Length: 219
Image (cartoon, rainbow, N blue to C red; front, side, top):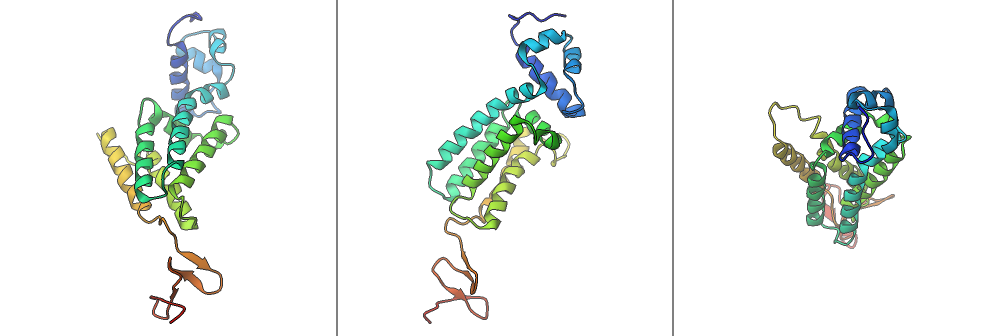
């Protein structure tokens, strides 16, 4: 079958089939010829829409990148509070559970090594770091940075770590956000400051006493 240039939906079908093959057998092990064969089209028809596998991957992450850019821009305009973080991760979950995004997440999870050298993979890593930074903005501690990253991972991993039979997408999303909220609750808006000589100080500048409880330096 030859798919003409005017055939509607051809680009979307190529994306869907390529994503399916990349997830089934891996990005590196899948060829453009295999994609064309599963579509029952010629390689020339495939080349009209995409010149390489990298182009295909970039095309189906464009929407995800756009959604993430919108979230990052919104978050930067908000105060660094727990309420902002909760809204941000909820909106992120909504975006990642939409349309074909779950399939895209599975693809990224299963092809991490190959994606390190792809432009789409580098862009995704950049956006993920920006989102994580917004989730812990106001608390620069290493623990907060790790919790922010794990919060995003909670959303992603709900698609492959939660293996309960017959679980619905809504239940998967709810579980992911419950775990995410536990992590977000421990990110402070005004973090404890570590002093290299005296140990951790509280927000008011108090130093822990021998019993581990805060005491004032002036006492």
